[in-house]
Picture 1: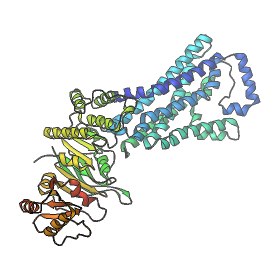
Picture 2: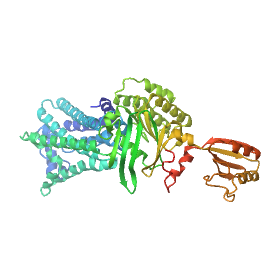
Picture 3: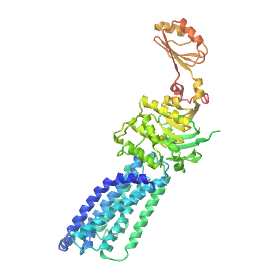
Picture 4: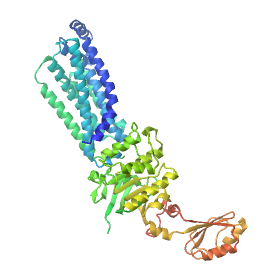
Length: 265
Length: 325
């Protein structure tokens, strides 16, 4: 691990982190603040009235308690999309930016191997995502505790965020592999951002109707066991394991590719 | 026998359409300053990318300190400094912060050399990278390349963007490093800096080494260029006619190859009242003739490497191989 590079990664990403963290916090606090078992019925009515629209926004399932409420209205859209944006920008800053601009040449000219460099950047990405998800979880717990003391199923909420973290790591893995393979930012965005967005759209369509439900087998978002966690159903760990394994495989693949590739810098 | 620091054997990288480098053979010994010359697109940077371990050879070998440049890049990096052709730094940092960052990555203990180099290039404060001029960035890159006391340095067009004063400082730096025994390979298309600093130089043309030259031997073989001014054009023509009766006055421009009446002297051109001559060997006979011809003014300079190498830059034939080795 290269400490000076890790420090550099921190300063390079702090601004985008703060922006996205602030937006996610705002949503989290507002959604928790809006929790009202009565209001939940109204939204349930909306789901009955406009099932396709609500489903496309990832808002499916009845919310009978605070955890379900949070799961339905945050973890179907905001908590999928915003950390995804963070992951894509993170990889641009940690890898593609260096390769595209040629600054990677300066890193490689120092007595540090490609392996050390790429592992440092992978570690920085995982750390940043962990910090984001950790901080958001804390904000959720604190605001739920302040607004509705004792209402939130803490273990369930932490599990929900842990699984979401693994899903975001999987997205990081896609962006990371794309960043390791591409030489230009355009190419990187095409694959590193394009694929996760495509998966997201497929999931939105799959949510909409029974006829299109088979599409769920073609998106990574199916691996997020939101409903199971919220409803306290068994079998969450298999999903977590699958996401962790996928992320690890993508990170390993990207690293090996980067170590062997040719760099026109 | 000195150690070989840089060794390229039959290094080939084929990008198709005759682009790339082909069968490049070079060896640079410890303490040697080696120039790598060639027009744009000849393959200088591609060669350097192999030395830095950014690219993998299609065929042949590329070694520094006896180690493979691609697989052992980090070990080589301990002892090697590098300046990129177009150095890129993080635009949100100041120059000082960037130097500190690089010093950290190089695990440098002392900052003494860094400050010495800043003094040499007359930098008291760098300021933010994004506001730096091309010359300033070049200086920052040069300090990065040399501040860790490297045993070998690879420089890709080191003086581009530097003003003449700083180019002079650069030459000072290279000569100082040469005394220390640092091995340096620098690519360039400026002959002057190579002429002042290098022991040997290779010329690359369309991806192939056209020639490798020993600069000391070359200096001994170098001709002088005499420019003689006469009172008027007629006097100049008269002088040329006496010197070389076969000179073609209509074109007033000759190949400068064929020797005139005096051994070692040939006419390059005759324009108005000026005559340009190349002279190799003792000038006594020429001087006598010039004084008899009532020369008004005479200036003498050494033939530049540029004039010597011009032949390699023409797209047609290769230069006279081996002549100056």
